[in-house]
Length: 283
Figure 1 (cartoon, rainbow, N blue to C red):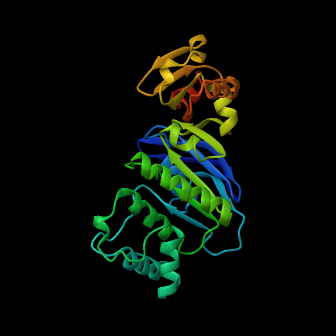
Figure 2: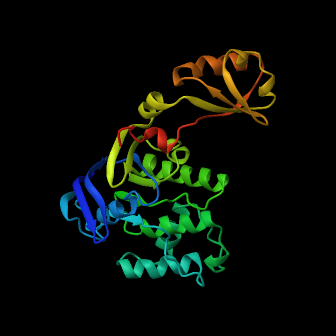
Figure 3: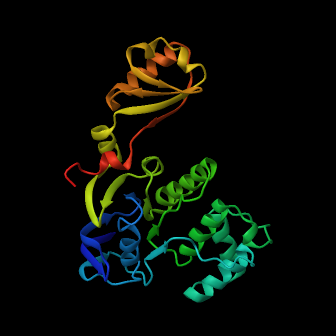
């Protein structure tokens, strides 16, 4: 649906992107993982048509006049206005419908309440991000580009936003491209991951593939898990109702089955995979 081919961009003091290629299909959630300053925002600005690359091309397979919507860095909201009034103003700016029913449907689409009349400065960071996404969706784009959408959110806010992103992809067939410097956030929702470092894509693959190839430990959360006899055969690091287990991904199904057999109910099992593990060693 959205293809960036051999994109390069140089600023006076820095080469921001070098021959970056990226592709995302309808209904797919792709993640762009990289440190701050790696080139994520520059790439997103190019994909959204905000700046031009020095070389390379962007292809959008769509007949719509405005097929891409996005949030680059923080959503620029009118903090003294309500969510409804923000949407109405941005809809007018973007040439989208401004009638009451349409604006209310956009609020409901991202899970914002219709009865909030107070200024958005009173909103939580998660609610502001939802409003930003609603603004990006005003023209019903086929592709959504979100730059660091989880930044500043607490775990509940992250989980809630992930659920919204997954619903938009699954139910509305929207292609969604996210960026983050944290692997944990992207691994929970992305089908495919690109890793960018110093303006170049240094690793790419399905989330499952990258986890299987690079993972060496998992964090398992369960009550009284430290007392498990099953874990005695593994190298572990103990925590409060959580342990880090050094093992391969293929060992996890058996391990979880054995823990269940012991009567230990696991509430979470998360791969411990960092950005550094995904950056190729020869870089």
